Structures are given as C-alpha cells and as structure tokens.
Length: 124
Image (cartoon, rainbow, N blue to C red; front, top):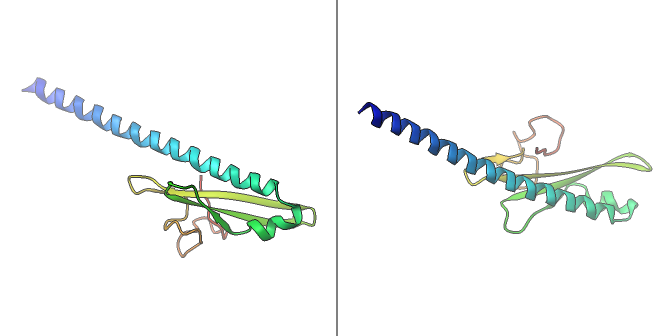
C-alpha cells in the first residue's frame, strides 16, 4: 500500500512536469512566430521611404495567417531626421493565457489593457 502511494505520487509529479514542458515548448514556438512577425514589420519599414514611414506604419496592425495573435507598429517622430519605431505582438496560448497587454487581441488600447501607462500596447 505504501509502495503504491509512492508510485502514484511519483507518476503524478512526472505528468505535471511533462504537461508544463509542453506548455513551455508552445510558448517558445509562439514567441518565435511573434518575433519573426515583428521583424518582418520592421523590415517593411526599412524598405519604405523615410518620409512615408509614419503615415504608413503608425498605429497599424499586422497578423500572421493561422496564428491567434495581432501585432501593432508605432512610429514616434523624435526630430526631423529621427524616428523611433516599435513593433509589438500579442497572442493567445492554447490554454487561454494572453501574452502581452492586448487582452482581447483587437490591436487597440482598451480600458485596463495599458498596464504601464505608456499609451501603447506592449508585449515581451
């Protein structure tokens, strides 16, 4: 009886570890997709005429086909010859957890989503 209890506890521990490792693997895959989507958006900005970047990419959403997430690019003019660009991507894991500030994945800052108060959506 004692051996059975030890075996059950051991098996439950192994199963919990296995499930957690699957969740981490999914997070890693999704992070890679999000990073590549954001890099692609920034590359599009690089290939655009400087004077048109703010008009074409400020507060513009982008997606990845077949992926439950949305990205937003922001362009801030620092001076006449300098701009700051930010590309962020938020997504939902299979377990329902949303990674990033855009909890409803609509690409807009809604009430309660801007956790750090900077006026834009952020993600890791």
